[in-house]
Length: 271
Image (cartoon, rainbow, N blue to C red):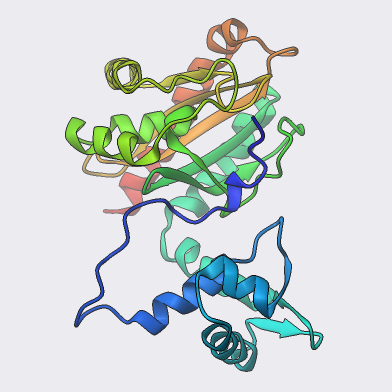
């Protein structure tokens, strides 16, 4: 099953109910921004309205506002995001010291094992990539900072879900409505709960071709000073080059050591 659209999809977490503390116009503006993706980088007004669930008039007002602020540009017919939109994501990345600390460690890990290395956080039912060091093109989709993938069938997702209280993890699994992306994907809720329990017990996770045929990945948690899991670190490669067995035998310890190093640096930073 193709997953080309999944890295840039919006979070599938339940949305808030409008009220005194909920600014609906702001929420609609974010929906307009999210309507742009790698598959839809340039859109007409009608396309933006359809993808964001707004009327043409409502979408037009938001697009013109974003254009005035420099976040959107238009050739008169099509709209597209400008590089200034990166400021919004950079504000998040620059506000947390973990990512500056993690990058050189990840570069070292990727160099040592010869495979791509990534870090992600949990957002609703998805993982969101916050850092990536790529050594090979290992997927049919393009991954970068801000990309989203379903948590239930990814190694980092299972590490992050396993860190939640069991009731919360189960609720997110149910909300995700797991579907088979490959013939290996585990979609049964009881089976997924067992995999989370196993991940929780052993402290790491390996996923073999559940997200995409031929893709093997292994992840470990990154902890803050209090021991709370704040992110996940993974290495990923192609099964025809690095089997799941070989990855576990030769790369698990370097992965765990890198995750522990980042956790220690984060703890020192918090002092």
